Image (cartoon, rainbow, N blue to C red; front, side, top):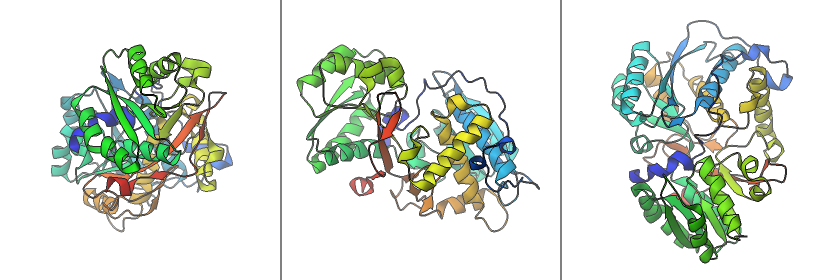
Length: 414
């Protein structure tokens, strides 16, 4: 199973094209928030700081600076309004990588020298190289999306988001529940994708009674007109992809529309489809492992309050333009980690944080589902969830949830 992680890079909710032009301005603090929905206890943290590391890809071919922004805004909010961790402020050492193992190793060494008790990952394509260094130093790694095969099954890693393996299974379950009998998906022509299709997508489809076909494409230069014609010839109930960049999603949807396809289309976790395609994007499905800040009313009441809080805090920090993108992932991860660390009775060090993470079960995650990081969801896997939501692009370009609750595929993946 470790070979399938290549599909996770674009299937699990992180878009390399989204908001990559952020200027990195230092965020404001939560104490500046005037909206009552954005202020909780209003307690400023004092005392000895709790040192935490944050690693994120902000160079090379894959750059996601908005995840750093989400982490910065959450840290300020936790420290200035939520009382930090047991009254102690978080002190975050941040390190940017460029996708190379060497850059990740350099960051890991910086974190060890800084004496951090945990490292939070935004994205880091070379992050598997950090694992031996962090393990030797007794520093747990926490993230959201499993961006490397070693991290998927690393006992020192914890990922609050859905397991990479869950994205294909959840989409198939969703469409089976919608009555679909046939699915044709596009996947990049890489060994990891073939392994994913062989080991997960095909057996899951068979278990659900779905006639499934994969159409592989050259990730460097896909000919979407030919690919769409190939898919449409199968006359499937559903077509699309669980693994594509924003640009590829837009090209794929446009090609399917041009080919006369009128079935359901899945465009992974892609954003900006309506901006790119106009009316051709309406009705396209997308997925996410958290409730969407642009669709607050679809969420349960408690999650609506969290989404409103998040939006207010981001606006106060001057990042309204990032509210609908990836920043919510790193914001939520920091909130979740601070709450889990607050359960520690005694000194907060790497071993204590690792123990608290390992003991986390039935935890109500911020803007997300109930998660368990104790290994009960997928034994041996570092993910805390297999739950996904599905959304649909509306006439005005917004998205609206088309599932009342998360699609849980733990049983399918057992």
